[in-house]
Image (cartoon, rainbow, N blue to C red):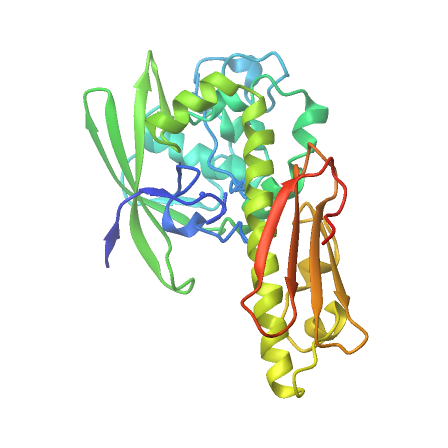
Length: 324
């Protein structure tokens, strides 16, 4: 069985090496394009890899965290705590392995605030109200739904205020597991999962609850650019089979050349429009933020007359479509 390290990866490559979020390979879901999760990836998010710390002794916060809560809690007496989470080692209460086990349990149960409080993404979420947190529900739920029922924790190494926990998780081949390393740091009396590197952690502390909002905007804008590039490639692939004529979005989707995500802004944050000339030998693809300032700021345009390599242009147009 191979061992892979818990290294930095692109956020929503997806929820993100480029965003400096760290997940076991199992979480390297492509938050880009089809929003295969932060995040964010932890889009992710899209995921996302959450952050925070665990306070095992706070009995009042065992099941839920209020908006003003300052500590996440692990309840050693929770009879459901180990459901689906097995271990080949003895796990002591409040240990690094215990924090990792609880983190996965919370994710699978869609207790995202509690999960994030166990990682160093905590400053990005502790200031969010429940209403604000629900804005990221779709992104977070993709992560929660992807958690396997059985996760085996196979090792724990502690050295001072640092720790590494080994867990058997699905790898590049979802039918096979790999031993993957999860890094933790001790802050005071509690262990926290290091889901982001030092640079990203500094950014999170600076941006606070705005971090996820800004990260989602950046990610959606990256996705919009990639989607337009994908539309362009789909058009030329279609035209090669149709004597140089381009097609509308629905035709490209039905031909299997584009994903269904392009139809709505639910997972992409952008509205896409494809305009054809009367001759169908020219096309213009547009991407406009569904909610300006929230799902994106930049508007995008790609034009092709079928003879030159299409170029994507973008600028902040106040949420309005660009025009040639």
